[in-house]
Length: 230
Image (cartoon, rainbow, N blue to C red; front, side, top):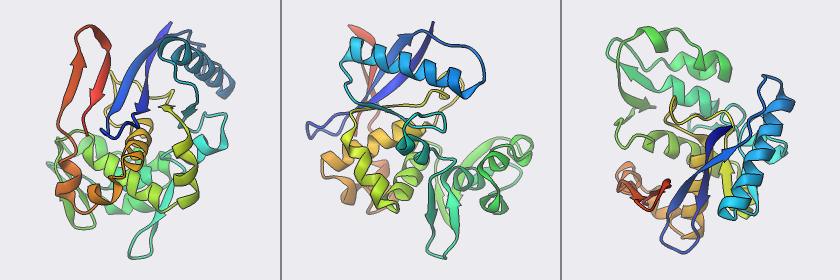
C-alpha cells in the first residue's frame, strides 16, 4: 500500500484547493507500465473515497496525452526575450543559494540535466528565487513554482482550456515527504482561480499572487484532508 495526494480545485467561488491523501495499492517497479497501474489504483480509490469522478495524472507517466504535455518536463513557454524554456529548467535555473546562483545557463539544459545540475547540490542553502531579475521569497513555500507553472500554462491556451474539465489532479512521482512543489497542485490552483474568475487579479503582480496564500487549514475530524486557502 501507498499514500499519495490528489488535488481537487473547488469551484464554489471560494477558491480553495483541497488536498486529499489517498491510500491505494502500489505496483512496484520502475517500468512505465507499473507506474500506470499505480495511477489507476490511485484514481479508483480517489473516486471510491472522495468521489473524484474525472481525475488527471499530471506527469510523463500519465496515460492521457494531456497529462504528459502538462508535465513540467514537457510544458514550455516563451519569455518576453524570446527564449523557450521548460518549466523544470526555468525553476531550477532560478534558484539562488548562499554561494551562487541564479545559474541561468540551466535554462538551456534538458529538464533532467537541469534537475541534476551539480551546482544545485553544492552551493549551500537555498535563499530565494530570481527569475529574469525579479526576486521571489521562499515563503510561501510553493508560491514561485505555482506562479511560474501557471504563467507557462497560460501561454499554452489549448492545454489551459482542456485542463479545466477535470475535477482532480495527481502526480504519481510526487511524495510530499520528500518534495515541496508539485505540478498537479499547480494545475489544481490554476483551475480553482479560473473557475473563481480570479486569474487576472492573481497575476497582476507578485504581491497579489503571494496574497493568495493565507495558510493551511486542517479539519481535525478528517486529518487526511488539507485545504489550501486562496
